[in-house]
Length: 557
Ligand code: DON
Image 1 (tube, rainbow, N blue to C red):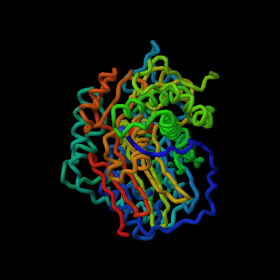
Image 2: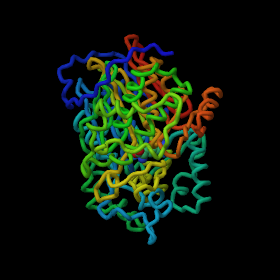
Image 3: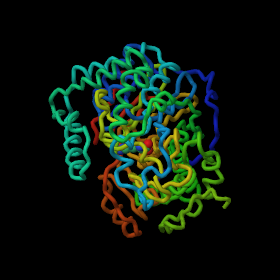
Image 4: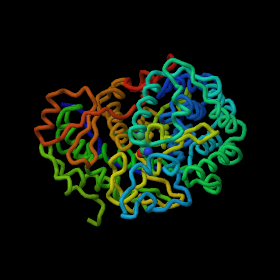
């Protein structure tokens, strides 16, 4: 059994500037944990050039738009959690619904959700936020010239890159599947020629990136690129117009911060559901641990208790979480220690609670990508970015060469009807013009005494929350090194489907048999792609989950 003393669980809201004045120790070491080799090399080169963690993140974001088209993007959005010179910050560059969007836009005459409409094609796209996000990040924190930071992406798009096997096979699989489903788009004409171990050039994307390189965010939201986006929308039944592009704004928000076990967790606030969910998850585990012996890592009891918590987390998510600019999200109440304690109190070590009885508790009663960077001054970022599903909406803006997101599916198209990730929602996440759709992306930093000790995050839709919570617990509660924290088998439970635990390969058969005996259904499917940096008194470690095509680099001490 784990012999870890539990500290009193306490959540506090700290202001964004609360850590000003903390002496930032120069770590000397710098590290990147990236979803592919191109972004790793380009981001590390920025650090070597004297750039800071935010500079390196901007480069990585644009490189991924070229080399990881499944998820890297200029046509999507994301979140960046930042710790910079002792100050914490959060950049929301999530997509927004176009002005012509309305709550029933994906329903047919009978009021049923039309299959694929929020997932495939131009109408599935929200207004992209990535370029505005990177521009805002550069304005506030950038130190190297913008043009230098965008250059590696331009180079890779113009002169091409050697296609990794995993990208080629993802393209082949995607084409086969969409053809089988009768979904047609211009995807094949852009990506079919990207064969494994051949050079793949993207001239149209290079032109778009050059416009961004020269004109900053105006090179995307105005001028020729904007023209191409709007024409494409008009010709393909999409909704985004010039006013929408001009209206898009990235937003600086206060990160959700809370104290846990002597650390400060710095994570994603709404419109992500992830920070609240991770806070609830680790909080309820702590509360359970104060009444029971904490189960061993990845034992049947650990999976069961974490699944019980997941039920409660996802019941709250469906009811309360949405865009805070549109709905009041009761964040403080959802992470309040007494509430967390009360929610955890009914969890039994040996029996599964009845799914329909797990209600939201406050009543007055596959593609995204993540990267983590730490510079030699100890500044760090955790950035998760997405076009939603693998290759987004499957359509490329003609002439501009980039894939559009299908983020509109993250809204609740109809109350109670699950979206692609099986998440249900209601009023709080209904579609409305210029509203941001609820997300699970949870780029997370953990600080101790003002120093960043962990940066983590993952793709995976709703499973992101499990990946982040478990990688964090692995690194800080179970004290695993970075490699083991990123690679230990993970599991996920989200209320629905009923009593189903999704598990990575690698669990003991006996553990799974114990869970089946308890009444769980085991769904053996890998999820997520964690890229994590951990800093201890021994130095900095970085790890990219081995099942992906990621790469981590750490400088020598
Ligand atoms: O924002 C969200 O929660 C989703 N659009 C993320 C999608 C995702 O992670 C897909 N990855 N496998």
